[in-house]
Amino acid sequence: MEKIKILAIVGSLRKGSYNRQLALIAKDILGDRVDFKLLEYYDVPLMNEDIEFPAPEPVKRVREEVKSSDVIWFFTPEYNHFFPGVLKNLIDWLSRPVNDEEPPVIDGKPAAISGISLGMSGTCIAQDHLVTLLSFLNMDIMNHPKVTIPHATEQLDSNGKLTLKEESYSYLKEQANAFLDFIKRRKCLCTPSED
Image (cartoon, rainbow, N blue to C red; front, side, top):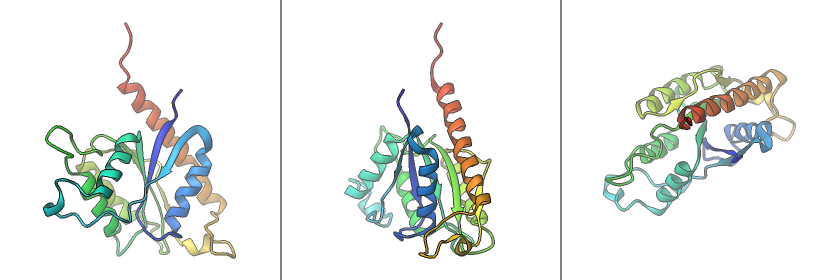
């Protein structure tokens, strides 16, 4: 049986970002049960209708990666009670029709959201804003369980690497397993039954 393809989109471009590290921990939790890939989008330009058609090469690349994935898992920090501008810019590009015949590549895609932050909210407010946007764009969002991890610096090892506390790890594991179930149910609903 073909593995589920999960595309992780991290809301920070920083190579050592806590949310990128969180995504890699999620990848380890899922192991070989899925095909898990991180989307690299540092080269995607600011959305500008003057350059929309034909789309810039980086935009074509990320659209193709989203299109070929089964689901999207967002890992977002919280900046000033919102998700980062780079993530909004990427979503703006992904929300646009590819051409007259093709709808936006995120239309109807199942999605989950996680996040870790330095502050107390654990990205809860940013995630709520992101859910509002993704719902408007017709993504199929798994709203429960959520993972919102606060105080990231309390979960680092002596080298500054994210090493989740047992409680945080168990929440992420629960979400990962729930997301797999969520995806499998969606795939069953989409598979035509045989008479």
